[in-house]
Image 1 (cartoon, rainbow, N blue to C red):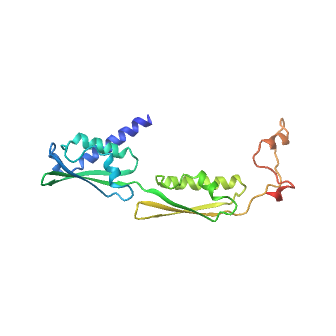
Image 2: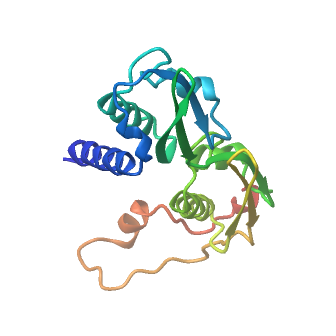
Image 3: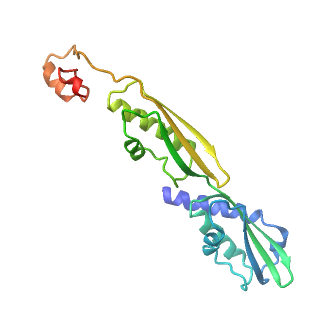
Amino acid sequence: MARKSYIFFVALIALVSLLMMSPAFAQEGENIESLKVMGNKRIDESTILYYIKSKPGTLLSKRQIREDIEQMYSLGQFKDIRVETHNEPNGLQVEFYVEEIASVGNVEILGNEKVDANDIREIIGLKRGATFSEHLVLKSKEEIVRLYREKGYFFAQAHIDTQSDTENLVNIAIRIKEGEKVKIEKIRFSGNKAIPDKNLNAQLETKEKSWTSFLD
């Protein structure tokens, strides 16, 4: 079902993109003199042109342009694509205007003394080159706090700052306040009649502080 929904979404976007084409696009069947990509910052023009099957020297086809747009959207790198055509001496210039989806750039981790930076990088989705989203920021923040809590730092906080650059990359600064490690002095159970305390205690990940705690 998810796959069908994705295909429908791409087709719908492609249809909208076609409706946004210039009036000159009515000249279907004319010779394509040149292709041009506009608006790209991070993705090289030659890379985009590789996925476009409309080529100079071929005839303009709405169907092929639609397939080109669908192919470009399937790369997962663009949030908007529109096409315009302009008359040239020997045919048409076809222009693809693209708006890229931002990607994660540099990721800096600050304030971590008790947890290694590599352990933090391993659990978060904010990795260089990943598609950036606010959801990814929130999820990464939750994962960092969870990691610290697993290690006994129940008051740890994570703040994530973002800054966009001219290459459509979002640089990340993760600032961590670790707080003090929490020691459990005593765990008490109430209401358990059939199961002894020691059996319940054995099932808990959280343990009481022992005389060896100073070794942690």
